[in-house]
Image (cartoon, rainbow, N blue to C red):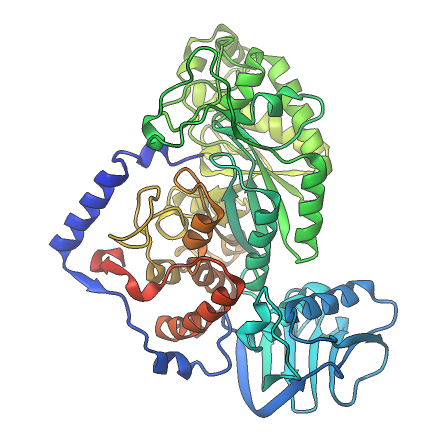
Length: 572
């Protein structure tokens, strides 16, 4: 994982530096939103903001007698209708029932696919019409119907999300006509489970939050120096050894003592392959693609602790209990058995994830051991490579060739551009936008994820915050992001798939802390990747977000109140 370069200051030093910067620059509070201003959002506090919304007159009364109408023999649509009923939660003693067939002339919520409307309704788009007598959701795909459901649920009272029964005779839905579709096809959110292991139940809750805001990619950072989190049957020591580290949670992340002789590693965990299948299926029900990341050639010392023969030096190694930089212990690119090992691992990963991509990291590879390793130097000579940068390109190309042979595409951080980009690779641009622009101009697909706008482990304010990973990223900065880089022609723009925010977890050991870092910044990201630029307005957005705080309260999730933030004019 790639932010060690930025960790020049520890947490306390960073806070002092930011506060000094703010004092020098002149602090100002973020936009203040009163209850009255939030009320202006009215009953249509939808996030992300739809492309077109025309308020109606009156309400539709959803009650136990309401029929939920789906077509005959359409299991995918029925599953979306069931998602709607699940979203209503415990609002009724007897929930509405699903019926197949019919048009539902009155007191009905009708789901229908209209493939002939694909020209008017893109694959993930939908049309939602609420009248006093019925609700219609029409889309050209089940995904579009699902996103229509997410909007419909946001029109209902927040208490539907409560974990406790809130029995109603009916629920009012305001009348409205909405036509909606996303700006970008890739709308991603990442979670690092290597630095701290998050249990399966929290992963599902995380997916629920993503689905609420029409995020459709979950980037699962499963391996890194601090823990290997996925069961690989052929190599059991990856989890018996690589998933555990000595417990140093009482020490600062970047200054942790190494293991003592004979000390038992007790901190960690991993997901079994059955866990993975369960989570992938759970995500698929919410139209979320799960993108696995298996780091290579760097950020892999936890794997080398288990199998040191694939390193340049032979070890011994241990799973890092904290952050150390630089970490020169990476996979040996001159050893053919290294690639046999990685191919085997990727084969098992590919079988677990239907996602067409596998993320291989590719970032922050310290090549000092490659410069000293006879096998790596022999590889450079045999392949006619100029230097270690081109050896990294050789490594990535060789991995890509295997991934392509098993029906997968390679995606990696923008360092995979070093030494020449693999032929079919997709680039995730984190070090600003230059890497993404360069890749798009070379004809490669790109996911934008620049630190300035998309690193949710950064601080949200200059004071009163829990520990974070450096950097400063308030809500308004996230919202100001225009995903499409300037200067690209129409053909190059087609390679910008969308954007993704990243939640690295060095300083985020608990689910409550993760939620706090995620919300409400993820709502700003959701609007960045869904809503047309012409429809974005920060003041309007804040009014809608405030209404969503009531939803978070009902769900019992943690979030940051943006009204308490203070930031510098320099943050824009």
